[in-house]
Length: 236
Image (cartoon, rainbow, N blue to C red; front, top):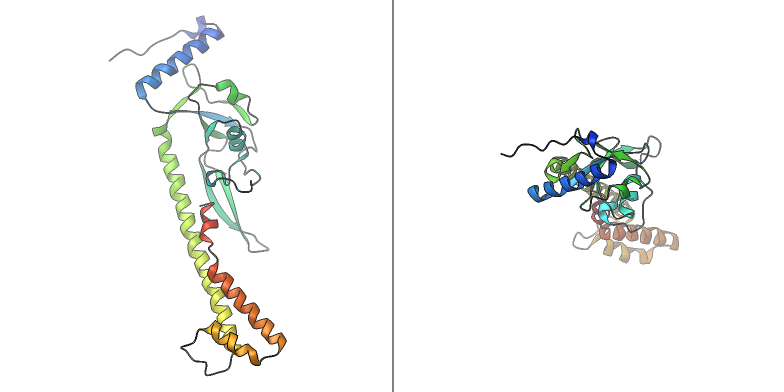
């Protein structure tokens, strides 16, 4: 086994250090044949969720400010994160948030070793340095476990949302159907669809009641046709 290369960086100028470091990266890539990532320090506040983009690709939903800044410059970035939900204390509305798993850090993939371009991106403080000269290298294998855990949690959230959505939809449908049954005459035939029976019954009702029943039927149709899973999949 070859001995580890030892270099005295104190005797090298800045240009020579950079040249040696790039050569070292090239040798590592040739030996490992795997993608290399580098950890960056993100400025405070840049890991919070950026303003949503209308029609954004699925993988960019919930992206942070630092992720958006890097991607806008064509830089591949991975920020380990997790989703969580909170219920608003006044409106009871469920609010979704995406938070960094490693506060203050993200990873960038730089096949061209374009470190200076990354340093110039707004929100990037610096690279995490290794004990040796240059930024600390992380390989794809190092990040797979983190990425897998993030994916697992996203799938859990998706299942939770689907369950909650189906329960809410079923509850609303049952409520509307119950109200229709209260309005319609007793002894309704069980062989006729509830909505069809309602459409037949409103012929003998006044205008106000007809409008009320038609509104309920429209709500039922909307609920039965609504596919909330597509919206769920944009996040989870």
